[in-house]
Amino acid sequence: MSRESAPLGSLRVIESSLLGPGAIGTHLADLGAEVIKVEAPAGDYIREMTWPIIDGVSLLHLHVHRGKKSITLDLRTPEGAQIYKDLVREADVVIEAMRPGALAKRGLGYEDLKAINPKIVFCNLSGYGATGPYRDLPAHGIAFDTWGGVIKAEVDDEGFAYIPEHASIGMHAGPMFGAMGILAAVIRARETGEGCELEVGQSDSTAYMDWYRIESWLAYERPEEVVTGNKADDYVRRAPGTAGMREGVRYQMYEASDGYVLFMASEQAFWKNFCECIGRLELFEKWPGSKFADHARNNRELQAILRDVFKTKSCDEWLRLGDEKNFPIAPVNTPKSITEDPQFKDRFPLYPHKEHGADMLPFPVRFPGEELPKPSWAPTVGQQTEEVMREVLGVDEEALERLREAGAFGSKKDG
Image (cartoon, rainbow, N blue to C red; front, top):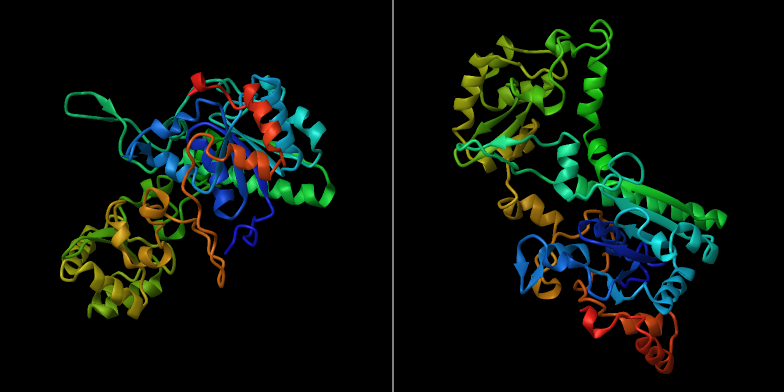
């Protein structure tokens, strides 16, 4: 599929970003949008951040900026600022993925750009959003997970606190929600002719992703006669979210002969199917449970039986039986092992490192009968500057040379 025929092939995005928040444009680029990343002459130092470093360039850059074009502009010069405005004139979206107001300081804030292009959608993605006491507080991605209560500090044997392994939430959820908001705003702008400004905090996004636990605690502040546990637990309140799963038995992890599986027979019908499958219908007769959401909490006798049962077969055997006999079961993968999982292999045909710099996961939305365009290799600093000037703005060689002389693209010392 060509970019032009892709779902977002008609969308042009001007992106000003630093580090991970640039992923907001990645989602759009993966769906075919033309994303032009405007960098300062020295470039976004994302290329040197975190690990691994592949042939001198960070995986973070290779993934976050795949499929984008990079141009350098010195926005401190009148010529550089004017080029930015010229790009916005024919664009749909401006992304300011950095502290709120960074572009406004250069005379390129929403009000400035709206005067040039009334349909422009201007989205700021920052750490803590554009309001509140933390709006100017410097932060990196894990800050939003600690702020959002997603992870807790752990302490090693020497008494030092450390960051535990966890899946990052805020740095991924913020760009995702931002991209969703952008598309909603673009649809309205195309219908009405009026753009808008929106702003997203990565911290807000972390909290929203954990809404179930947060809202459960809020619910538990109300009287117990109003907010209870579920019927299967005799209406006794459990700890919110996955914390309430620890004492589960019919919804629990078990060791198989070659790894672990997650068993999830919380519905009575699934539990009966499982017992019939293993030839132990007496377990169902003794502990039939409630119709729904019954985890047989704290039933250590049953848990010991199930522990022994699950050790008799491999993970693959249990998955096959779950599929055949209709009871919920899942593999327990790791970020390292998941790439060998057959379901992963089917759903995630990796972008190979020979073509993209690193082996990377594709955008996880499918369009049956279509194939999304393969993203280009993440650009070097300013790699497409002259291409964009010629093809997007129609600038000829003589004008290009004048802009170079004026320092619009930066000077050699900037690199």
